[in-house]
Length: 58
Length: 133
Image (cartoon, rainbow over all chains, first blue to last red; front, side):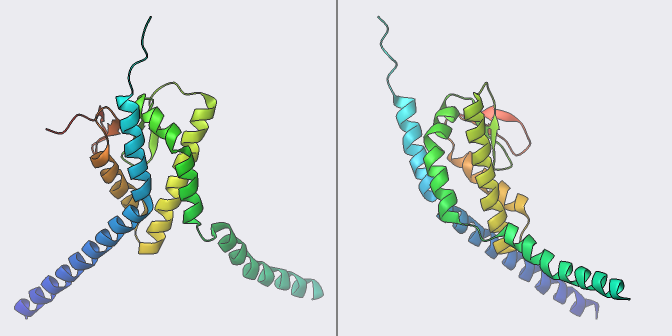
């Protein structure tokens, strides 16, 4: 009985882990879908700003 | 008796109408419109990050780290409002808590941040991102 009980617990835990991983993967994908373009634009803008030459002093 | 019936009627109508109004306030999220607003203010946000006046907090929102004009402060607040809208929208979609979405986004922001950007670490400490070895 005890053995059967621990087996059920293992299955339940594995099932929960799978669902959690699935949600995390889907969430990351959804976040990338929404912010992907913005992140790319941001990267380009930031690189341009950081590599802009210092104004020449006279 | 009539008064009692009248009150009961009003109570029932209120009960029926209130959820409808509450739902109308929530409304569907126009993610394209949110995205368009974010794109529009992106140059300002990026410039403020490069200047070190704002940083990326561990809750997935922007935090003010220096002196900002009233207009720029407003821009940062509007950006955070839109970010919150998206985090809430995704939390609802996946039936998970909003902070889970926000922290997941914050982790990605920290990873992508360019050296010199103010970022808040998971533990709460603020650091300027250093170049990866």
